[in-house]
Structure formats: structure tokens, C-alpha cells
Length: 235
Length: 160
Image 1 (cartoon, rainbow over the protein chains, first blue to last red):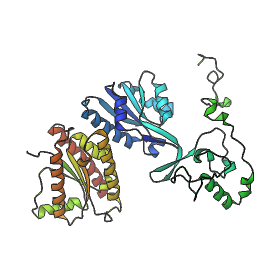
Image 2: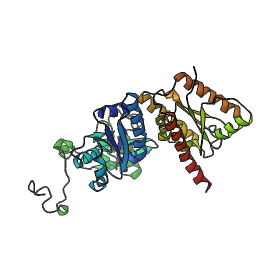
Image 3: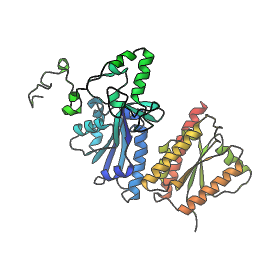
Image 4: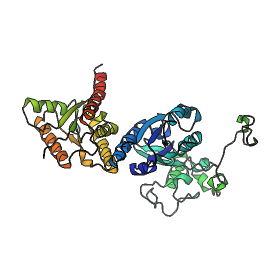
């Protein structure tokens, strides 16, 4: 799941200072589950934003709310198409993908982010989410007992632990578990400690962001004239 | 100076609402600024419910739930306390005094305590003065009725 948290009300208020009618759009998927951008949270922020505007003498600004099932899918964005025309600007409470999906779909409407998108992660305990995947493009979880040293080790080292590991915690912060301690504990449980004797090779980072923005292409799924090989303007 | 502020008392059906009833039976005095709304449990009170009240223009909100450990639904009042803390944070963020909302705990037998916290809250809000978000009185009245209707719908559902 993509994990995000909300921006502060004054920041949102400043974003929309030039607009009179603003629509807040929530997303019913990841950000609903991580309690940042679903229907309830958008309701709370909408109410707070209206009051905040009124307190600075801009009470006539219209701030309405709605939530769609999923912002990262054009089929669901369709439901918004008519409504968006009635507003000067939109604040999307989807993740960064959702904001950009709406921006692409509505080129004439100024689009703003309501959330700070954080990472791909999991619920650790009620109200606590932890990063689990960095989306490096070359998954090596099989080498590390199913625990990722890229997303979960502060130094991203492949042959750990480092000297900063103490009592199962990371030297950066005691709130961070040393993932290398966890990898070794799990290998011991699985009777696979010998696998960690092998030297882990350096990562080929060309599949990560270092290679520029990425795309996944499935040729067999591409529609004729619309794939990456299509001539410009053929669509 | 005349204190014409309105304090909404969101009272749990199992404790504070009965305590308010008892305060009445005991002929106890408390300020007329209080508007009592009956809730199925303070755990039912979401943040946006309280924020709506401020949007409608009430000057203060007191949430009154059961004693900790005594919730009919086990932990509704504990959840409410956390939510009220969050509402305080949001009020502060937008520039409204967080003291305008407060959570209290009391049992159904504590009529005098209800009168006491009502008085305390009304005095506090009186000192802070009217909310800068105050709407005209008819809108405020309609808003309070709407909030009660929302709570009643839940209470009705519970009876079925």
C-alpha cells in the first residue's frame, strides 16, 4: 500500500489563495486505508479548511468535497469529469500518482496535492505504518530471507549488519529495527544461515531511479498504434 | 458583560445524559448556555462531527463520556478522548482556541458533577468570547438540529 500523511491546513489554504471555488477529491484506495485521504479525512480537512478561510476573511470561498474509488485509474476519474468543470481548482487527496492522474485528465484545472506521499509500506501496529519496499526494479528479497535491506536498512547495505547495529536496533534511531538482525534471526529460524555466508553482489541501480523515469511495457498487451513504438500522433 | 455563548454538550446516553437528567431532578443550577445533545456513545463522535459544530457557529463543545473503564462499549470514551485531542490540534492549526473543546468523564450518578463541568465550560467559553466563526442564530439552531438528527439516526438504529 502507498502510505501518505496530510499536509497542514495553512499550507493548503495558501495553495488555493487565488481561487474561489475549490474541490477536494479523496481517493478510496491506499490513502483511505492509511487514514490520510479517504472520505472521512477529506471531510475533516474540508471542514477545517472552510473554517480557516473564514477566519482570514475569505469565507466566501467555496470548498466542496468528494471521494472517488481510485484516482490512479481513468475509469474511476470519469465520474468526476462533469463536477470538476464547476471549480477553479482541485486539491487531490490521492497519492502523488493520483494527483498526476487528475492533472493529466483535467489539463485546464489547476491541481494541488493535499497529502505528502511517503512510501510503499505496511501497517506495523494500529496507527503506525512502516516502509517496506523501495521499488528498486530488481527485487532481491529471495537473497535476504524476504526482508529488504534497500528499503529497511538505513545504509542500504547488502552484507550486513554494520557496526551500528545494537540490541536489534539501528544506530540512526532506536525506533528503527536493524533489518540485518531480522534477516539473520529469520535465516536461523529457517535453517538457512549458510546462505548468508555467500557474498551478496552489488545492486545494479540502472533499474532504479538512476536510470531516469521508468516504464513497464508488455508488448503482448499493447494495442496496435498505442504502444511505445507507435508513431507520434497516431493514437 | 452578558455571556450569550452557546456550548454544545455531546452527552453519552449511558452516563452524562442521565447525569444531566439527574442534575435536573436535583434542581441543580447550571448556565443556560448549554445545549445538550444525546449521543449513543462518545466513541461514535467523529472528528468531523465536532468540526461541523464549530462550522455551524457554536462557541464551544464539551464531550461528556463515561468514566474510563466504564464505557458500555468498552473503549468508546477512550477513543473519544484521542479524537478530541486531534480536534484540538486541528483547531490550533486553523487559529481557533483549542480550549473551545474539552472531554470530560463522569458516571450517570453524578448529577452535581454534570452541573459543575457545564458551569466550568460555560465560564471558560464566556471568557474566550463568541467564536469568530459564529453564524446567525437561525443557522446555528438548524445546525444543532441536524447534528442531533444524525445522532438520533444512530440511536434509532440501535433500538432495532
